[in-house]
Image (cartoon, rainbow, N blue to C red):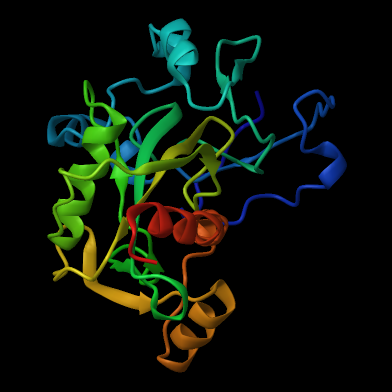
Length: 257
């Protein structure tokens, strides 16, 4: 394996020709840069493991349960000849990990919409790590189900408790997360909650703000944020587009469209 160099976690990776992204294309000289931050390198890993957010395996080859992880994955993935997991969307130009686990890191993203039509609003948080507005959500804890994680993450990040509501699952999908590498990535269960009116939201863990934004359309949402000097998290744009398609249907079914 080519020698690696540690770079900043937000390094875009080496140039990636579209025709070489697929793992099925041989690339003998492929040398991705390693974005592993100090808390996940061998010297810092024990502290991160003790804090409960990182697994103790230094390398993917140390993971003992790849068969079980592959069977439970939201998006199927394969292993290379060394037993390392391969990102299901192909090469990223980056290796190492900036996530808690090797392979798929399973998340839960609740999209909460209040009202319908021109009066519709969506509940978003301002992330404390990258300073942009995003869907509330986070990683599913060990032994936790996706429905439980949806409720927990929403409560922790916005103070809104929707445990009594059964959402519509929009997708179980790969997320274009800024932390993804060749061997660690994020896939999420995305679910839509539709309410007749807004509930009070207060920023909690992983958020510096929580706010209801007008949500008649993505273009309008982008313009509103731009006018306020704010920015929408690009990876969540396709998820919000799915929510727009479903929100009016669910509102009509609940009788408050």
